Image (cartoon, rainbow, N blue to C red; front, side, top):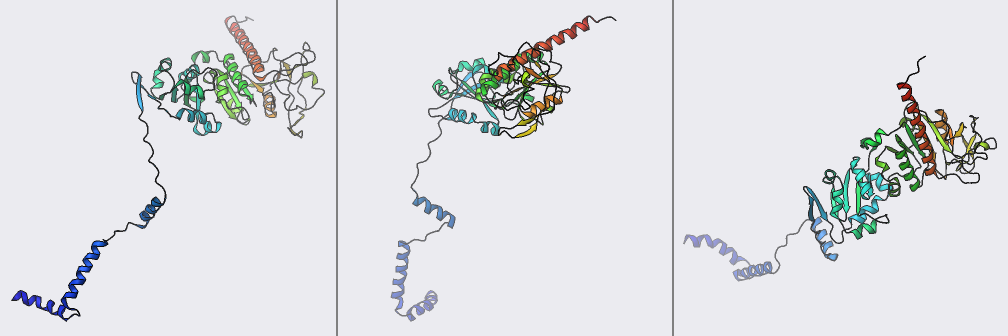
Length: 416
């Protein structure tokens, strides 16, 4: 009876509604069926809904293929290398980028090719990053300690051949950190044979000429080589090939402006210039036309002594022919006459633009001379690389003779 009493009020209210209890039950059943037909949706945040809509509109792209498994092999105790999978484009990408001067300067990386060049670089302390090779036998010919710190990749010889600049590729291409001359360890034989003889390259823009000049400088025992702005990049592949390892035998300081050249020279140095200006024609012209300051001379009378004295500074004409900077006249003499004092620097100009006015001013400020290489009249000026070799080895001969004379005086002093 108590339960019936508690249910009575609810029952009374349902009876008082229009339609009675039957209509209320029917409405409840319709609500349940509606919930079954359209269930409640949980909406994601606005950002996720937008991404989902874009994904539905754009066609689905196939997922990227998984990277190929790296196959590693051993070339000796602690010396591991990986084999490049088919379609591996690392070699071509690296070679293409490393040949760009902008890349070399920005990322400070250089490309070396060939067994001898890579071995010379490693022995001098250059840092190898990646070495591409075609046969494991190439690794056994290189310093093992340096190879263990690098990434070694074995590729097909056909791949190296397709990207190589050499006529007969050797199957070795290395990517090195750009060497710093202050951190290099040059060969002991080079250091013991070094002379107080320096070379300054002015507007040498041909890669083959610059590489040959660097090789001559190393062979003559130069202390260092300075390259002014306007010279070709010494780390260009063509320069490296022509240099035949000279880059790793003596310091090469590149991209110098003329204001910073004196700070890279020893104290008391005398700077001489190799010039092709005919000393017999000095009285006929008062200017030094651009392009005439090359490397050899064709005097009308090769047997006549050159006794040129400093004169008033003439005006130097630029490429448009407008007179501008005044350049000094230097005392001229033949290259085989005595000029190599201790220490001495030689400036060699390019064949096209020749010596710059800054080079002549530097020589004049140090009491330097203009060195003339006589050639047969009518013959054009000598190639810059050939002239540099002639002057440098003559300077070496004179310095060694001077050192020998000084040693003899110390051994056998003259008694007064």
